[in-house]
Length: 218
Image (cartoon, rainbow, N blue to C red; front, side):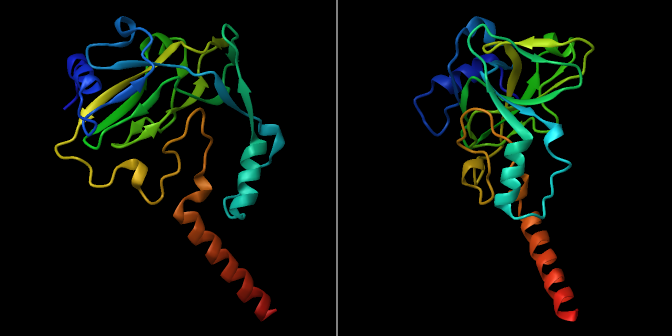
């Protein structure tokens, strides 16, 4: 069941911490609450992709090496109040919500762009629009300008909205307690930590074994 604006507000104001939805700060409830969603704003920090610095990202390197490659692949930028961040056509950048979000164990959410910005060509996520029950932290935007003209973006703009869904029963293991959680509790923009996925650990181990066997046979 998707929550309407009254149910969202009731969950935000409840005294029961097990049922409470936290989205803060809410700067203007009249602007931000829709019939079945809550608008969220753009934060001031960005991670800009610098493709000229790397030929590729190799997930089979050691984690520390990959983390260094990812750090070189992006450049952190923080804009000041009233200062634009200009996203040019075809460009990709990471950003985050101005708001801190925490979901109870029986609520999931969906992050979607607002139609006002979609009509200008702004995409706010590539694939990561689902927010698990129990998530806590800022949400990351995967911004892309699919339009034909540069888009100046300012901190505080309402570029996205959250819709909330009630589970038939609470999650047994919320997102922030999962074994392979990589982004829970983070504030500001979080870059990819894909190399921490267990699949790549297994692939790296297999590559080491193959290399060791090849050396022994030689």
